[in-house]
Length: 613
Image (cartoon, rainbow, N blue to C red):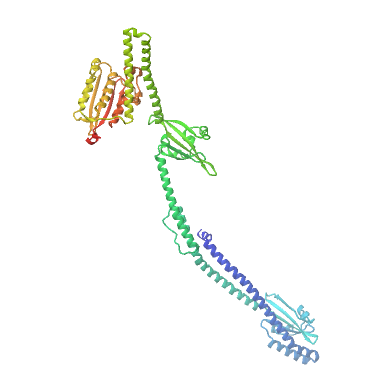
């Protein structure tokens, strides 16, 4: 695998290119050189043997001419013997056979001792026949039966215009081709040495190119893995060095961009996590890809089971209901969720926003879940408040109007009836005045405009005075009241008039809803160095559990008809709560239907500088 990867690398490709270029160049040069050299050697070989043949024809011509003129056999044999010595001694050619042939094609002499048997035999070679016919250019190359390449040259011997014989040469060309083979081996060896040197130089030279590229590749891999500390080493000012510098600059910019992106991502994640509204984001397929903590709290779901699910399943609505929101300009859906732990129903306004992408259309949807439970409760409280105020004012106004009309219609003429009507009208008017006064007081307390005039107060004395103010009512109904102030209770700084109002409301309610011969206990306890607790407890009719959560709401009455008959406005506990809160304390109510009610409020002990403020 490593070898395969090497041949796939740029370095191997460059080395192969260098080697191939040298190989091709050497091959072209070698082929041209060998062809030229072979042509030269062959031409030289042929020319040399042709010259020798011509020279031999000139030297042999006198012998043949003398032989033709002298018919004496003895002299002829002497002449041919001399001719044989000349051929063997003066014109001997290595690896070649020379034959002297007369006009009849008879071999007169041969230079090969082993071929003496052909003397006086007729040579029937085509080249010999052509030479005897006077044709001068007679040569042919052929391969012998033993695989030896040879050349035949035949030259005519002329005596004047007459052909009196021929010179026949058979020369071996093996020396020539052996020389060519040695030269080829030299070229091949030189080529291999050149290729080896080229490969070594190629490795060294290409390393100067590929090493920086490998370094840049390693650094690019490190950047892809998130490691930006290392830099590419720049070894020169060439193109690769400029590439390294550019890569380092790009890496710095990328590091800054990723760092900024991470910061923005963390900010966005922090915003999504801590925002009061729920957020759900989907992809272009409508599947959830992001859900923040508030959305999971509202929907009571887990992130692991939510991601990847369709939005309509997460919201618990049908796909058709979700599609109906898409064409709207302001797609908003009101939903309600009941949480068992909080034992309340949440009202949630879901707003859908489509994310658009250039060239792709819709890229997803964002659903904002806004908890409007408090707003709904506030709106409901406002509606109830307006309805209650209207009802509370309409009833006495209707009564006053009716009695005034009766007086106008003649009741003034009857003193007893008129006196009764005027008394009822006065009572209703006082009732409206109390209602308006309570409303103004609540308004001042809500707007923080009520002035709290604090003074040092004896708790025991304050509670005793409350009991004295209701002594007549208590005696009339034979209700026993006990004051229990523990010894560690000290004087406290508070607004005496407003706390008296709180105690009056609580004791008055206890008397109203306690049967004759009942029992009321007012207790003061110091919880710690900073807190005083006062409680008013009765053994009256109590309050149903379903009404406890709303008992401090304005105009809320458990028994509306009885409360109105007793002259209550439904604002007493609301005013008491606001006064206690204005002092920095808390108020709570505990009740058991049929067994009585206990209202407890706390007041902080303030330091001198805090009391002065």
